Length: 82
Image 1 (cartoon, rainbow, N blue to C red):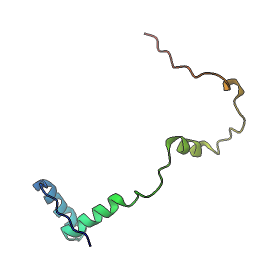
Image 2: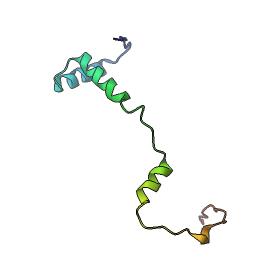
Image 3: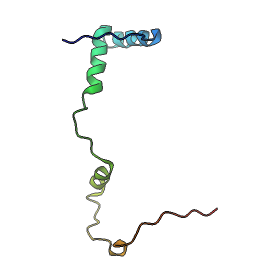
Image 4: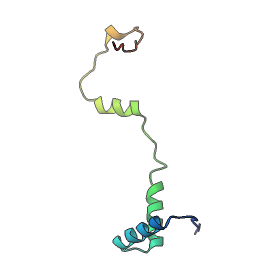
């Protein structure tokens, strides 16, 4: 098993870790291991990009036809009057 030392940890952080560990019925060392495991748990999962998430959300909304009035048009920036 690997070990490491955390230097210059603020006293209030240590106190909060100690209270958190007590609430969960664990030692402070086990609480830190639990926090670290949770922190890296999902790192190997593929992150879905925003466009794909939006497309998935609206996939079953019923728009099946192409929008020909938008084809070939250059997108223009919005104009805001003063």
